[in-house]
Length: 78
Image 1 (tube, rainbow, N blue to C red):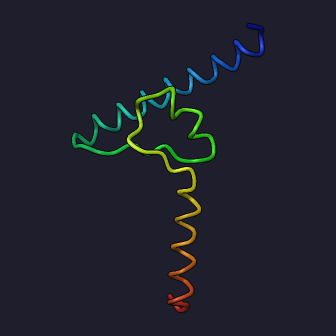
Image 2: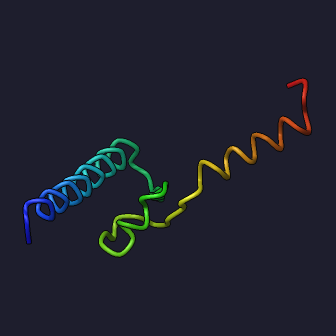
Image 3: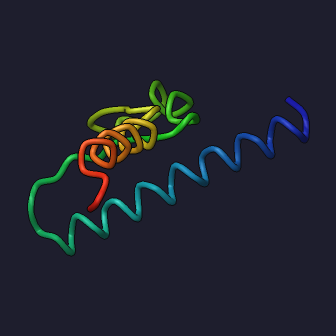
């Protein structure tokens, strides 16, 4: 290993810890079952290393924008 690899590892596992803690706190506040979805282009980096997520959706934002576009096309005055 080298300095760059060690920094990359620290950033990766630090981010994993951050996401775990945020999810745990939100779950505790909501006190009900919920699914955790990993989104975005970097989601696959975590897919094999972390068991925190219920599902992965790389293109969730694009799917949402498609739904909004379709709605606006069908209902232009709203």
